Amino acid sequence: MSMGRPGMMGHGRRTSALAVDARALVRAARRGVLCTLIPEDGIPYGSLVELLPLPDGDIVLFMSLLAEHQHFLAADPRASILIAPHLNDEQAMAKPRVTLVGRVEVIEDRASVAAAYVERHPTAAGYINFPDFQFYRLRVARARYIAGFGQMGWIKGEVYREAGGA
Image (cartoon, rainbow, N blue to C red; front, side, top):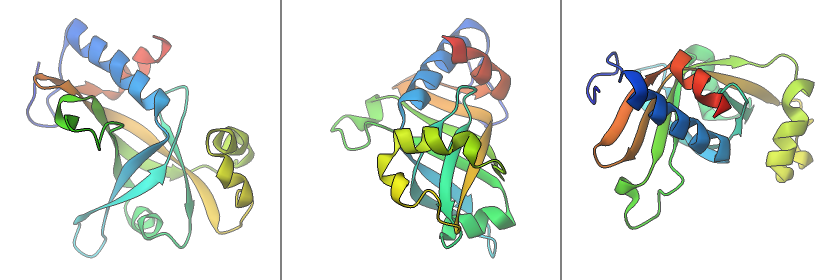
């Protein structure tokens, strides 16, 4: 299994097992770090966001048009989201985490995700109908899952999606 370049992916049963674990971590996630690209120079910019994982493994974001990361996505839809639930643990580097990589697109049908988003994030009920907020979807093209030291791999998008039923 590859632990190197993004273009190289792990293979076989081991990658499938990593995909199952990655999907479980994503399903449980409430927040993550969204990384977008600053248009002027392409430097990555990270920001904390609330998440709604979808059954197919993609991620829904709810962002204000005033948010800096939303402006960056309008210029370049490429993004990643780091989900690291053990970030503040003493042994965080030995704990599971996943980075989802893909492109972000506007969700035109707000009603298709609004109720589920508010159920996961009840405080959003106070601003769910604000006109300057929009739903977005990160379409996962690949994932980098790290289970702990020496247990990691890149997961192709289709393998990541297929692992969702587990």
